[in-house]
Amino acid sequence: MSSDARVPAPPARRTPTLKERVVPALISIFSVTVFFGTIAFLVTSAEQWPRIRFQFFNPDAIMAAFPNVLRGFGINMMVWAIALVAIGVWALVLAVFRSLNGPILAPLKVFSIVYIDLLRGIPSLLLVLLFGFGVPALQIPGLPRSSLFWGSVAMVLGYSAYAAEVYRSGMEAVHDGQRAAAKALGLSQWQTLYYAIIPQAVRNVLPALLNLAVALQKDVALLSVIGVRDAVREAQIYTARTFNYSSLIAAAILFLLATIPMARITDYVARKDQERRLQRTV
Amino acid sequence: MNRVEISSVTKYYGNNLVLDEVSLAVREHEVVCLIGASGSGKSTLLRCVNKLVPFDHGDISIDGVSIFSEQFNNNELHKRVGIVFQAYNLFPHINVLNNITLAPRKVHGVSRQESEERAYRLLDLFGMQGYEKSYPEQLSGGQQQRVAIVRALATQPDVLMLDEVTAALDPELIGGVLRIIRDLKTQGMTMIIVTHEMGFARDVADRVCFLEGGRILEEAPPNKLFSAPENPRTRQFLQRIIEAGRL
Image (cartoon, rainbow over all chains, first blue to last red; front, top):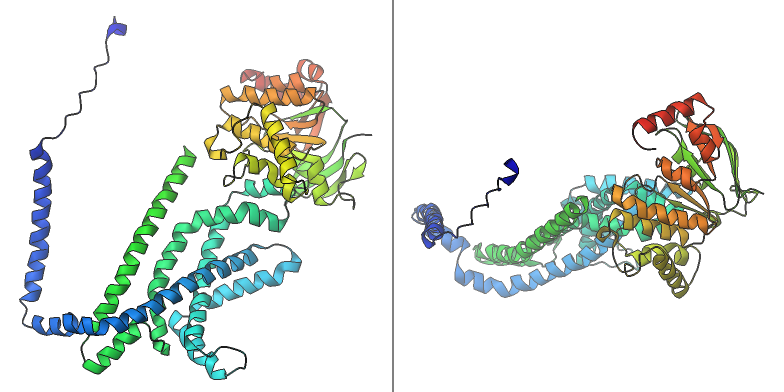
């Protein structure tokens, strides 16, 4: 008898009515408008607001400073792009050094450990000052004397220490069975790294590396302190001349235009990575 | 001359004795199954043969030549002795074809064309034709294990070692993998097999060794070992297996 009992069909999914869809949307639009509207009203009705607007959000000043700030921003992005490539390579070399085994290769391992400890422990600003002012001052023949060059070198050296640790975590996350399989197939230590471990490690840590890339995108502004005429420096020059800070806002807007898309890309890659991992465990 | 000769191999992990003077000779075309509880040293013994783990005393030779002799640099050893793992350990970032041809091309200097032709032939033979461009994650466990066997065979080894190759598989996938191993036996492949599939061991082995505490306690043809074991520990082990419904 009980075998005759039918499982009741699941209730058909009802499409929500227009009212059910629109009302919540209207409520959220309303509450957001009221909340931020109140803040905007309070800020702009403050007694000091006209002065703030004139000093920071002055359209004329922004337009006047914009060409120079934009040119400076080009330098920021150029340094960023070149440094990114250099860091990607150098940090991988450091991570590989650190992973090496065997007595003959010990110096490379020790070098990598000491390097990472030192360069991770020094503030980026200090590195930029040391290299950007210090090295050109030595006037060593044959070496470039541009502070732009040495400031970029400082950024590369400092960030590589972080990126090397990121790579290393990715290499350690590769399952031991992969190394056993590579060894059993006769691959040498280098071949194992090159064909088996590094490709998997890079895939593992891509989201983390992109996060570093976003951080670097802003940190290249540190080069302004050693006289590189980047966006921040150009904005400061304008400010010093006119006592108006809108040029700094112009620079900030440019940085935001670059970093926000980059952050979205990072989120996207991280999500894809997450999906890939989940798929594998199923 | 024995194809593989393991003489008095002793291995410690720290203070833990995992192999205690183990000796075992495997003739050409012979299939030897190692059985015993987990931790008895079966897998470690396999890993000693192809130097995946070092051992403390004793020697192992292939065709009468010690694996520590000049003649056996690592490439030569790993070419002559193949191993397949329980967890397949295929490289997930490269496709099936590249998994199979990586070692022949990069370690043994076989041309891409030759190694790929051989790979296609082996995939065909093991019912995996059409999967050469797939990535390991896209395959079932049984298919991955078949690819892993093909990968181990791609260097044309003289000895194949199989380390619990069906232990991670769904029951309905085990049959396909075991069939391949039977085929390999028919073709005369020399094999050392660690397994918990007693029915399979009885079927495919020329000789079965029962290991416990890092020692081979009993060594006999399967019919004798499974029906009339001499050692009381072997009897006890088999009794438990029967109780668990695995024989």
